[in-house]
Length: 340
Picture 1: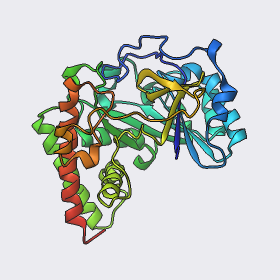
Picture 2: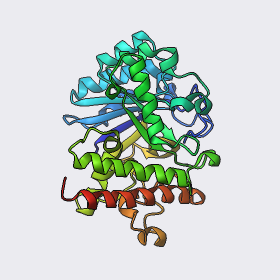
Picture 3: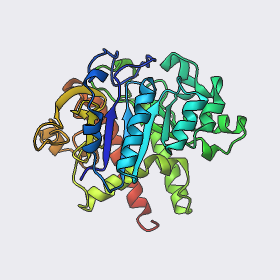
Picture 4: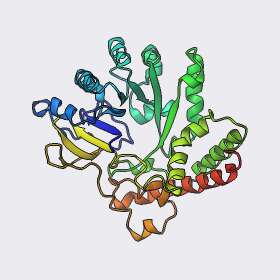
């Protein structure tokens, strides 16, 4: 069953983030307006059911008017649909914020804390236009942990302090930390690998999470950060969920551009088919999941074979992270089995 639809609006971006999964943004990899068939794309989205519609780029706000046009069409067809987008925030204006709020968008702002400018190349929204961020009704931040920016507590403290500076409760500036991955274009110097500092920090995160959960606090940053990992692992251990990549871009996600071309991943612009093909399928076979190395690895339950777009030369980065997480997740579940 399709639970999420990712609509690729553009592969262009107005930033040059050092760790971008999409590489150098070599343009013209997805359909242009002349080829759009918006009505047909909208009609391919499941109706009369709750479904997440994620508008993706590149930088989706480069195609803001198209995004809003499509959102209205989808909402008229399926009132239960809800919208999300991830943006660097550079192009936000008061009018755009009002329109986004009108459609009840969830907005994830890419931000890298105190390392923001060095990693992303532009001033952050909390410095230049904080009123635009706080004006968003459903807002949160997303940070990418790299070899130079991996301390979760440093990142969380940054956003807590910014919230207080701007007169808000820290809980109103939530931040999800994503650990850097490589789809073949990432600067390898940014990858986290055999990093004792990162390992010690992650162990502390799980140690503190265990204490907080045993005391009944499920609102701690550590649990919020790892809740989806815990839910996924527990569901797979119990047999309630089949093994698939953690990113979620699998057979439950429909990823397409506005001409109806299908993609297996919104970060790698390689077409896999079209909604115009009879009996089209979502998802893509994972090239790693049935290898001997994966089959013999206990962390397979968590990673599901890892990123399908990651080249074999970069798999060791992903394996390193997932094995660390798996070990700590299992320990947490064992330690808390009597208290959850």
